[in-house]
Length: 360
Image (tube, rainbow, N blue to C red):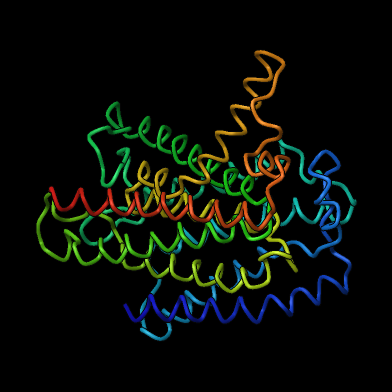
């Protein structure tokens, strides 16, 4: 628990004080956000606001995590390294996207194909690594089984090791792309994605600590009352570092935002969330914990699908938060109410997680 507290506290302080320094640097370089012309007109006033704040979130999370390792004199586990690799890797893809937007003063950065290739390359390396590096008990960080609250009986390696590896890589990349784009879509109002991320990653701190206390490796047995997650406490430390980094960043990202996280932060946070759900063996549960992100994505899918079928729109604008903006809701009102929804999903997810353990 000491490592969890240290990582979260250090990341929070680094993010809180580091963001203001980064804002001054971005203002001096005139690296400001370019606002899309087809969005809500109220957003035009945000043109020029510094972006790429995800750089601070990533840096703060890394520093907080390393500080916890140094303070507890622990070596980094394979699971924690994989989460950080995916977070930094996708953050780099997002950074390239943000930089192109800023340098060329347009709302489009990397081409969809280039972004897909970048995300795919990082995702494949993560997925292969997740099935490598077995520990003394021959447990790898991830499993080829589809997981809900723990591994289910659905095994992707049922038809052979090679086919299982390929299917797992495809499954992992689907989750990575889904979550990174979900956070990216949610990042449309000041503080919305940051606040929702705090709640979601905070839930994974609780999940990791509980799994650590009820670990099958610790209890020396296997059964419905223990978890086979490889490095649960290390995942909790990483989740705490990301939570702390988001807390510090929210101070400056809350309305009126002094800085945006950009694709750098959105892709990094989405990737980290996907990695935590995969490595903690809670892939489907993650869709409940991150339910707000799922709703935002669904609103976009429904809007596009319905328009292609009928030529009409379900919402005034997608994603969902823009619909309420055009309906006359204030930005702060939307953000707070969406945070409440995110909190309810997190409470439901954690409740389901605990209830499954109670009933065994």
